[in-house]
Structures are given as C-alpha cells and as structure tokens.
Amino acid sequence: MAKLTLEFEKPILELEQKIDEMRELSRVNGVDLIDEIQKLDEKLNKLVKKTYSNLNRWQRVQLARHPDRPYTLDYLDKMCSEFIEIHGDRHFADDKSIIAGFATIEKHKVVVIGHQKGRNIKENVYRNFGSPHPEGYRKALRAMKLAEKFNKPVISFIDTQGAYPGIGAEERGQAEAIARNLFEMSRLRTPILICVIGEGASGGALGIGVGDRNIVLENTWYSVISPEGCASILYRDAGKANIAAESMKVTAQDLYELGVADELVTEPDGSAHRNPDATAKKLKSAILRNLDELCAIPADELVRLRIEKYSKMGSWDEE
View 1 (tube, rainbow, N blue to C red):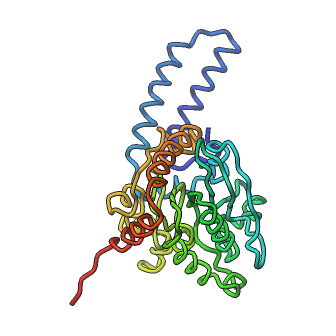
View 2: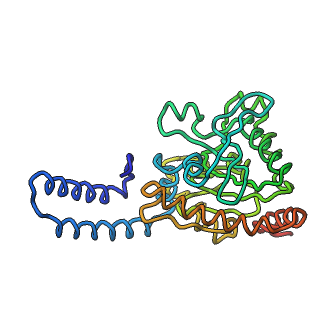
View 3: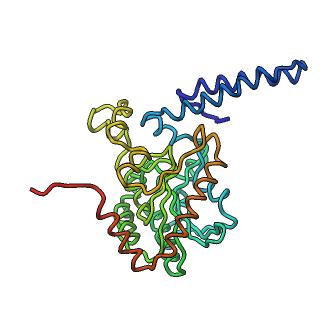
C-alpha cells in the first residue's frame, strides 16, 4: 500500500483499509468472513481499474511525481544482473542526482544513465531532489563516450523536475553542459534508448534525453516547462496548473500521439507505485525488444536516422 495517497486515490485506500480490518477481525475472532472479503476484493479491483483508466492530465502529472514511484536505481535493481556505478565528471565533482555506470540486462552489456531522486528529506538533499548540476550532465557524457568507445548501447532514464537553477550551477556552465550533451548525443555512434519513468521537465530532462527510441511509461509527463511554470506565466497563478496541463498536452499518451514518443508502455492497474515489480517487468521487456532492433543497425545509419527523427518533430509555416 502506498505511503502517500492522492486525492483521487482516497476511495481506494478506504476500501483497502476496510478489507484489512475484516481480515484482522476474521483472524482474531475466528469469524468466517471469506465471502464478504471476496466480494470487497472484487469491488476493489473494479474501483482500481475505473479510477486509473479515467485520469485527467493533471492527475497523471501527480502520479508521475508520486514519491513511492520507482526511481532509476529501483529499476536497475529489478532489471540488471550486474551494475557498476562510475562517479565524477573529471572536472569538478560527483553529482549524486545523476546515476551512471555499466550494467548487464540479460544478454546485453549496456551503459545506463539516469536521474535519481530521494525517498525522504535526507535522501533528497543528497540527490539534490533529482535536479542535476552541470557536473551531472558531464558525468553522463563521460559515460556515453565510454559506451561509444566500447561499442555498448546507452539506456537513459528520465525523471527530473528540471536542471538545478542555482548560481553555482550557472557559474559552472549549466547551459553549456546541457547544450554539449544535446550535440554529442545527436551524433553518438552507438544506440541510445530513452525511458521516461517519471517527470521530464525542460532541458533538465532533455540533457540526457536525445536518443534513437523514446519509451514512455503510461503515467509520466514530458514538456519544455512544468504545468505550474506555464500557469505562472500564462495565468499569473501557479494554482491553475491543472488547466495548464490540459492545454500543454504533457502526458505519455499525448507524446505518443504527437510522435515524440515511439512506444507507450502501459502500467499495471493502480500505476507503477502500487506495483513496481510488474512495471519493471513490462519496461524491461520493451527495453530488450528495442535493444535487439537498434543493435542490428550500423552506426552510420543509426546516426542518420536519429538526426532525421528529430528534424521531423514539430511543424512550422514559412511566409
């Protein structure tokens, strides 16, 4: 059961608590309540399916931010038989908000990079709330260059509220670090697989988000700005984020329909935070399938197709 309950999840929580109470009553007093519990379980399953299949965009944004949702290290733990982390950018420091290293996923030897958030205040301070400094992007680039050198595919996990906007980060070249990654990833001569596992905000996400295939989990979002930021600019009121989210079309479904995402991976009933194991299994299956396809493409063709893919995104008019 999730530690945090969103407003639209409260009826589910109340029913779960009622079922738990009945099971405890049956255990302590020896009362046979099997039939009643079974009926409530069926009711719960229907309620879960109904609730999570009728979410609006703002509710999906909230799910993408759920603190119980699996993060990069959680997926690596569930998917990989081996993971060796590397540290530091060889220039300034080791940014803990970016994970990078070598991993083994079944038959594939890969390089993984990804944003990492914390579960509590102490962990979030350590991980800088998943908002990378310039050295985080440079560490990611260092890992990607190693992948290119040793002919290993790259898997990037996206989950950030944005790059860190502090003075120190700006002094150390935040914009340059992100721009350099965009340039280098566009021409990296090895497969790059992008997986959006939570929230993807602005250049903070795009800084490790240029690749050959974009896989998005069902309850995620990806946009140039957060709904709150958009609402602050357009409506002068961050409280209207729910309205902005609808207009911005930020969800995984929107991305897939617009052609920004190449594959939409549905989450188990109740979203990833209620069933992380099943979510990891489905995402792993999508990753392995895409790796098999991408690794069969020659490097020159891979780069050509990647540049062509991003060149086709969006639309414009010429006067």
